[in-house]
Image (cartoon, rainbow, N blue to C red; front, side):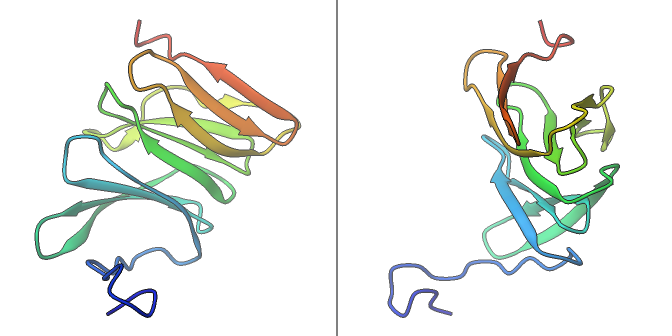
Length: 138
């Protein structure tokens, strides 16, 4: 149960459900939720309590490895990006795609960041980075 050969970190949950390596995981800012993205091209939503964590749902739509996934800080949305050259926005309550995917022709996406206060997201790709806002969220 000890992770680093000492008492500095102790495993609280072991989450099993992805078929291939997990590339990213993020906690919801206020709810007891975790989101993960993996090389199985899936995004998984997990719920946790004091004693356990369990899979709630799976979102499918990416056609290559999911590089990064996060919760929008202000809205009930999940944002993911992938080596399939898309950024996807998912509605947490419907667990389905909320907007048309944002696509780049020549670049795989690798990392995402959300501004904590403003409607701004950043995405790193093969040839640089873009900063964008979701129009539906004025």
